[in-house]
Length: 377
Ligand SMILES: Cc1cc2nc3c(=O)[nH]c(=O)nc-3n(C[C@H](O)[C@H](O)[C@H](O)COP(=O)(O)OP(=O)(O)OC[C@H]3O[C@@H](n4cnc5c(N)ncnc54)[C@H](O)[C@@H]3O)c2cc1C
Image (cartoon, rainbow, N blue to C red; front, side):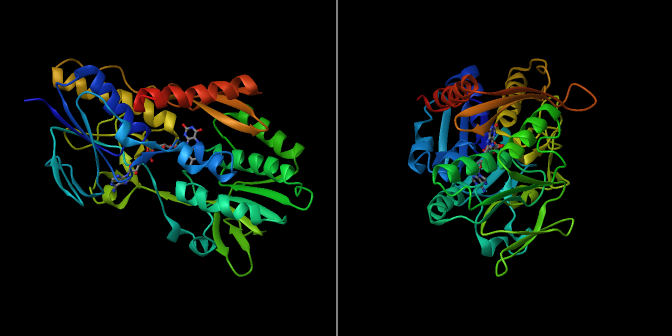
């Protein structure tokens, strides 16, 4: 009988696990890939949708296009996970496996920030970016605030990218002079592991008259007074709020008992959890790297190789290296890159490459190689 692998969540992490295992075993494996959504969207595409650069339908990749030997995608919502019995219950029934991979990402905790749900203007989900794309054209100038409600949050450079892209958007609409832009982030500097990246972002903010309010998250919003308050008690007035909600592991993951300090703790050697034959990858874990697709994908690769080695009774492959490159939009078609090493030294280190059109082309290539690898496009 073929080994049965259940992959929970078809984001960067889950898609990469499915792809590597399919490459390794072809039809000699039974992989079930479960996701509640019918389409995948790259995180960075949400910014394109938000600023009207792309239509929502143009950035969605249907999971029905995942055509890989040994892989079956099912659209179901996971209601419970039993890590001891390797069983999963969904809205459509039950699945059991020999190997289980949890790749369910991070959810948004709107209730953690009083006033956030009423203001209703986050750009971190596809639905939120789509909604705000309709609101932005109605903004006629005023105080714009990009506010992050807690750390850790996905893609640490994304709020800074949002502020720079908002600047371009307002310039193009001819209302930048009537507007102010502030960006409030929990960290002292925009991208702490890479001082070069932080310096370049702070310089870009200064050139564009964007106010950087670092060191404290937005902890509450007053929808009537249109004021956000950060953890240091500072009031940040806004006419337009572009928000990043506090993140948390999905409830169904917390209920497994596998989480420590909110997320699943895994071993960097093989991405195994404390339960036998259960792996976890990506934003749902804590493994010493930030929450970003490129790291989820890298972890997915290592988990898949670890599963393959167990199936074949071979020694475990090399550990997860915690290396990743992130592309950062600097506005007007220029993209920078930061290469970060999170696990090899005593503390993370990052190397910054200045914004250029060449790196913009490289970022497009990053997206198209994944689209082709995962969706055959
Ligand atoms: C604005 C923005 C810009 C970003 N830019 C970048 C970037 O440039 N580079 C980069 O590397 N990263 C970027 N990211 C971050 C990146 O999108 C995430 O870190 C990445 O998607 C995490 O991958 P994952 O596989 O761990 O989880 P996810 O991609 O979140 O996948 C989890 C999957 O699980 C599914 N799921 C959850 N709960 C259930 C359930 N109960 N039942 C069934 N299915 C469920 C979800 O539908 C989802 O498909 C960005 C994010 C945002 C918001």
